[in-house]
Image (cartoon, rainbow, N blue to C red; front, side, top):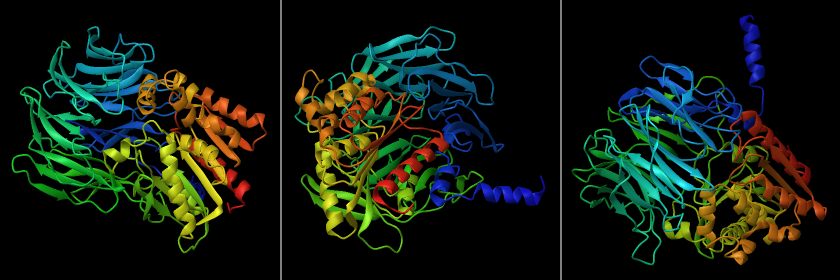
Length: 607
């Protein structure tokens, strides 16, 4: 091929609308680096059109693709010595499988933990000796088990319980194992236990005991120093997530009390003398360095927007994955360089996000608004509802909302009660009235959007994926006059059937949210199930679902669709061969095209 022909081919390859370029442009995750071989890193990229794992030798600059599966791979861990890459092998996105490993330099995959049956993953921690790992397994029949795995030996079970649990971390010398568990039955608020390698307990910490408040704990990591028994944990004792240092040998707790208003996470600097602090507040984030000896908090400079991951390197620099609603994500360093810049097509930007605060029934609601540049309302408006529910929308780059903006829609994203970043009470407020609480907040923001002149009340779309898909279907049934259209991706549609078919960890979460099983609290499941209100749905409905989805299983979606069919309701369904979403770029683009087309046909909007 001549150079001119090659240039022409490249131009044709990039001759596509901006919204599609945002999905196709190669992107990368924050690289994970090996603790004892920091030049060796592991990251995720969609460079081939499917999200897969990649190894990166920083010393040579060499990169290679580690995994190559039809439905993609994103779950991987690099061993501390940099010798092995562990990756989770499931079937077509069903999240049920086994861990495999591959040499960093390349070679054949092998079973990483021979003797362990297939399961849902419940955490993994790899030892620095290159032959030890702690592997968590979850199954519907047996609950959670945690195993000590040593090369050449049979796995040894060191923990088992019917309720959900997970591997937190393995100490630097491999002698201690931190476990997050919910033996008390509250899947939203974990307690902590530290075990020796033989499974005997060293220390316990449980903030759910001895009070009326429901408080959770989380493992953030052992100190990166041999013989150091300090464990960095997160707590909620002052109404938000904050870090403290817990010496599991002496049970001494060092409260940091950083006086930051939002949720605060942390990880160790590699020498153990300081903490990298990640502060998330009102849809934006920032980084700090906290010196443990002096208690000094020093800001790590990052641009305004959102940091979705950060790590401190051995030289003291910080690498972080940053974006804003207007600017695509990039892996940057405090040294000033872009750490990973994949070649090829570059993602176009989008419009900035605007903050809106609306008075709601449970307090002030934060919403993020984007609209086409230079437009005035009233506009066709998409309420794009986040999943989780314990998650939040932020001032970060998202190709989906940007696609709607490109097609002339305003986009409103609501951080309803249940969202993170606004304090524990806000996150926990939805219990027992699940779904209905969130929709009250969405309704309040909807009224603001109409009253402010932003939104055309006759052209309002409710949409979302996962929990956002669930809220979409529930909203169409409980607020039938409010929405002109509904687009639900991988939703909960029939809550009772979903409960019986979903993976065990989600059963535990639903028992916590609703106060029991469908047999124990049938009235709560009925009140919170979209299927209960399906006959009240007036708007056309579009549903997409993965046939291998263990989180929002296909049978309960089919039950909902059959009810729509039985009364001749306007609807379309798209089923695809994957799990809870797709890691294949072409598939994701196909889904967005179908959603945009559905909206254009039913609302008459421009395509």
